[in-house]
Amino acid sequence: MPNTDRVRNGGFEQSTSSTLGPFWTGTGDNEIGLGQQLLGSNNGDLDQAEFMAQQLLPLEVGEVYEFSAAINFDSGVPSTGTIDVEITGVSPKKFNAPLMQTSGYAFYSFQFKASVANATLTITNNSDQEIDIDLISIFKK
Ligand SMILES: [Ca+2]
Ligand SMILES: [Ca+2]
Image 1 (cartoon, rainbow, N blue to C red):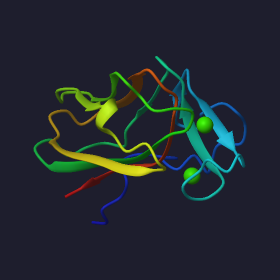
Image 2: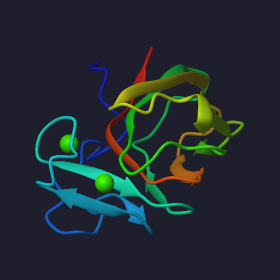
Image 3: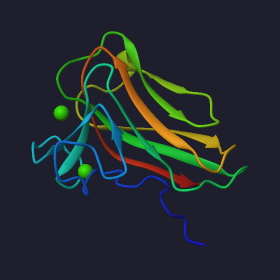
């Protein structure tokens, strides 16, 4: 059985306007052709306190998965706060923004064991600077 990405439109290339969809909802934006993407033409953008979320393709309970995303601070260097990743049934993961790379994109990842089949992924920018985000994926390990 192929190891399919449980995140859909994780690189935002299916998004055709400034809204995040398809698949994504939330208060963030899709950016097209601004030169802020890591791959393709588009990237997501989360200002302070904004979020994006989507229902994941079904997970297999008990299996280990890896979340990965590329993040770029596009407008300034963060001095406080976190980038939060929440997956239903998993304790929230909070990346410490002042210690994240601030000169271009870097990849951030963690592994988790699925405890529910139908999970929602939510990414929230609780840092004090804006971020670009691209290439969000969740693959089974
Ligand atoms: Ca992209
Ligand atoms: Ca941006």
